[in-house]
Length: 370
Figure (cartoon, one colour):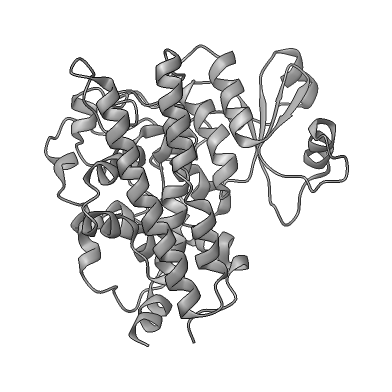
């Protein structure tokens, strides 16, 4: 079928452009170039091309600084933050920065190789994170938003290091369970489960952005959003589908979930009342745990479903008239913490971030539309 042909020829770079440059999704997927890899020290334009930076309202002002400082631990030699996502000369001027919806200062992370004892003794957290995993990414975002000086230990889920397995075993109530990420170690205590680790970080460390709800009313809205944003099940069903009818059913469920998310944002923003600050996030102008705990699925859905199933997330939201959700997606993807961590995905995996995600989710895909 033409759909299967389109999916088969969609490159990793093209798949990721589906989200970042969503205006370009109304054109046919380009035929030809496969994955784009950057040479050592070179600027990487494999994900966002200058001609594909979208012309939405987010680009209407040119207030963004000329560059965003790279996260701690990034490669030297001028490699920009979010290498493989948006080179510093292509970061668009966003009205989010002008209106202070997003910080102009890039939070930093650390990926040093401090020994266990030194890290525990100084109170410096250790975070075991598989960079391509959407669940580990939640704790990672919280650490970066709170500007925590932490030691990141990248985990290969196909070859887990013994100390990672041991750390998980200490924290898991099920002694026989398979070790998963994230794992957070702080002051000698091991912690597991993505939402719990992210919440611990938000409550324990006081630097950077205060991502916690300010009161029970905000807490309710954040919880309602997290319950509503149940995109994981239809996402994985679409990947695991064994026929086009299964794919279509899963994508219909995903679209229904997106419609509920639009309604949830309407409810959340109405609760802010006339005195509430307008903004794209669940809590209006305030970036919070609502985004930390949910937005990590956005680039995975965009890349994996774009590549394997021809589903274009942002285009789907626009076609359904989900204007609040489209704005929320743009704002969440524009967040400096999202950009910097996605850049680290490419750096750690040694490839562009689109290819990294496609490779990560390949294990879920058996039927490719032949």
